[in-house]
Image 1 (spheres, rainbow, N blue to C red):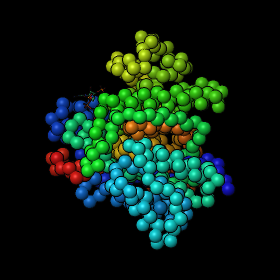
Image 2: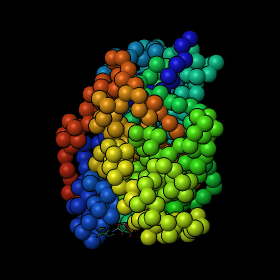
Image 3: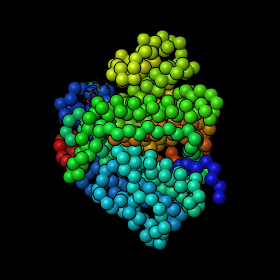
Image 4: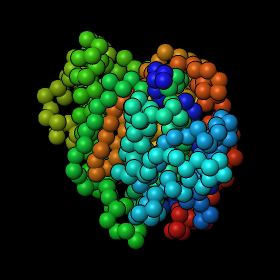
Length: 411
Ligand code: ACO
């Protein structure tokens, strides 16, 4: 069986039609003007009303993807779900989705749920890709679903909520294929964000620690990614070797800082991606210890400033949906990928996208995707058209923070 270019053949996204403007939320929360919009970099936050949850969102997105791409449900051989919004400690969301396959008589579908904060979707995706590349593959498609409703207790984390579900069809000859050798992970034991109270949907979160853990994991993945690339390709990797960088996006400011951090890494590795002017501006930070570098506000500012021109080209196209919807936990990274596909689908042929997935606790992986135009219906232009992002965003209704219900908790 042909196994070339295994990856994402098709994708669709569902997000709730109800949303809160971050500007209105700032005023409602008594936060200073600009704190959520400029400080966190967010525009709007989607939330599940009382008639939907992670299961209904995932049923909707899977039905939609199968219908729009005219996929016979019998052709799905593996279904993996990534989610951290636990509805039941034993019964998986995947089993709920099996209802979609009942009528066709297809019960021969491997896979269950993967759960580790925002990383579960990536675990599900890697499982499906590995399955198609393995001896166990039976020639059918894999299907990955990322579904989460991110809600926080009242306080500084609340504006970093959001909700969405994404479905991705996996198989060979994909327009978005994995460069499987270019993959690096960083896993560790940390309590930065966790859900010890099983009766509450809110996490316990140490916001500052989670930011540092995220950036430390990013550094570690990038270092190992570069080492592996250099061994295989025989040349140095720098941010100039990928057209786009797509990050897990809890809120936009962290994404800006993350790209600046990659730029700083390139500076420390003396890469040609860093010009002389930037070298001069970063010179005074060259001898900081790792720990000092995470705490340095001056370094953060200087590296964001020198990386800005590349950020605008290589990162900004991925920010549309995360800024409009908020943190979608497992779906967040893939909504950012969907934004690139939506914004740039007609110029992606032959290009590389580097992805960074982070889940608190912590698990993280950096991996590389290679794009080609593909063939209808599995083409980049059809993926962009099926995603139908503009229409989905425009048909939302804004709810005032005083009337909105974030999941079970009303303001
Ligand atoms: N205008 C412009 N900017 C402002 C304003 C204002 N009026 N007020 C504050 N700011 C800026 C701050 O300077 C800061 O910017 P900086 O990051 O460049 O320093 C930013 O807004 C955030 O303000 P802080 O006071 O530093 O942080 P806050 O107490 O609001 O908490 C946090 C932010 C930690 C992100 C919180 O929302 C949180 O805990 N979120 C959940 C955890 C999270 O998302 N972690 C990320 C990785 S793990 C995961 O994905 C869940």
